Image 1 (cartoon, rainbow, N blue to C red):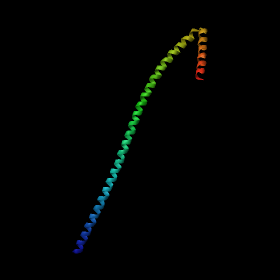
Image 2 (image 1 turned 180 degrees about the vertical axis):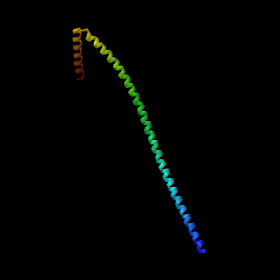
Image 3 (image 1 turned 30 degrees about the horizontal axis):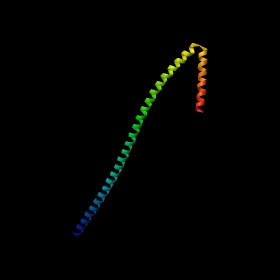
Image 4 (image 1 turned 180 degrees about the horizontal axis):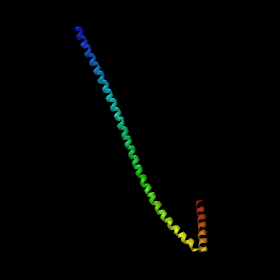
Length: 117
């Protein structure tokens, strides 16, 4: 009977040891999972920060493109006005006016050349 009790006691100790090892293993797994989740949370925060920065930059660039589009529209209107004036001037057929315009244009180019140099 004593050997039976010894086996039971030994079996009980082995069970207790097994359970203790399993608890330690499970606690270690839980700690590793917590560390992994912390790393994932930090990565998510960094991604959120990067996404916010990108969003702000895109909004700024969108506004810049709208401004550029408006400026191009204004300049196109001015260019159309000038082209109509030039078209009317060309229709007059007055060679003196055309020669004067060409001469003034050449003079302007020469003066700009001297100013730059």
